[in-house]
Image 1 (cartoon, helix red, strand yellow):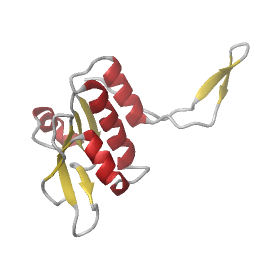
Image 2: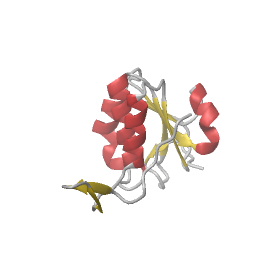
Image 3: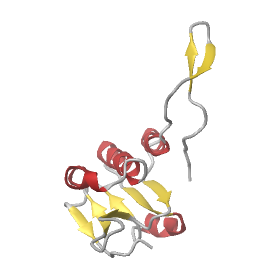
Image 4: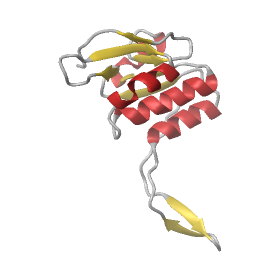
Length: 139
């Protein structure tokens, strides 16, 4: 298992190799997806506090996504995901799946073994047809 993360102080070199802080955001989801792609990982797993990716989250109509084609997920549901929360994970997972043809999983930290087995979380894969929904409970 390999992990990547964001945070820290973004820096850049000025001429003369002077290291200075810069205003930037280190996106841990994108960093993880890029690392997984670059090392040719068999699967990308993004563990979070949610059991899956949900549409209608926090409403009586919420539904868990169990599997999704990355292109369909973004074109039909991108506005469902919070910009500072689930959206970066979904975009990174979709980018990984499209670039590699391998699955990306998003789900709860406690469910990593089940995500590896394909029995928990949301699987974003080019092998999916459309978007498949499962349970409605986020917790």
